[in-house]
Amino acid sequence: MGDSTPNRRRLLAAIGAVGTVGLGGCSSGGESTSDRTPEERLSAFLAEGRSARGYEGLVDATGREELVIEVGAESGLAFAPAGVRISTGTTVSWQWTGRGGQHNVASASESAFEFRSGNPQLTREPFEQSFDERGVGLYVCRPHRGVGMKGGLIVE
Image (cartoon, rainbow, N blue to C red):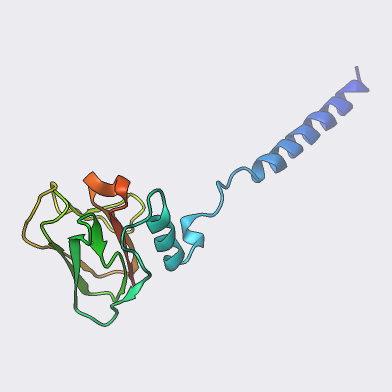
């Protein structure tokens, strides 16, 4: 009995150490959003599932106090522009075109900012949101997200 106890303890300690090392590699689900640049976060969001309609690259609107984004652009199922870089303090005005059915603007769960224009509507007064902090704002039209109606802002 005296000889088996130390061996059993060493065996259990070794199993515990191996288990801890093995789990260490499993604790990370891959690259976290904090490891990616704002551009990478925006591009990944716009490419996810159905790619954002009308996205042809990031538009630089830094230095502007206001920015207009069309809701229901192109075929009626896009935001234009879909990806924009803005400065802190910029007010974004989403303006409905009346095309493509009822739309809204709602922040996505991955967004650094929370905002929502309300229930989907065919036309409405512009929805405005000021962005006073740095971050990545990701948004969708809730009824049309599945067909790629989404957009994003990099606020710097």
